[in-house]
Structures are given as C-alpha cells and as structure tokens.
Length: 60
Ligand SMILES: [Zn+2]
Image (tube, rainbow, N blue to C red; front, top):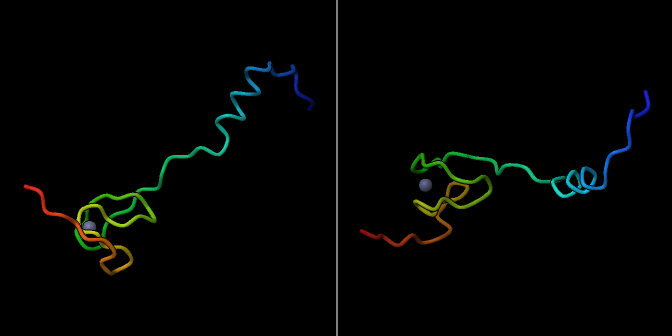
C-alpha cells in the first residue's frame, strides 16, 4: 500500500535527525559489579576485559 500522505519537511527532517540514535548499552563490571557503559573501562575500578587498564584515584 502506498503512503497515504506525504510527510512534511519537519517530520522528514526530524526522522532523519533522530536516525542512528540509540541508548548506550549498559553492562555490569565483572570486578566490582558496578553498572557501566558497554565497551568502556569501569569507572569504579578501572577494569576492562578482566584486567586493569586505567588507574582510579581514591577520593574520600
Ligand atoms: Zn569495576
């Protein structure tokens, strides 16, 4: 079935502007079980893929 009505420029541009945007994947750190963004080193303990890749400064 063909589209019933042509989309307005605003609708078309809004659709294109939001294409490719998706929520970041959430993973859990294997080391400290903190919730972290997928494919990122843990901000709590600095571990990624089973080894420490960044040093985390202790602040308290
Ligand atoms: Zn961690």
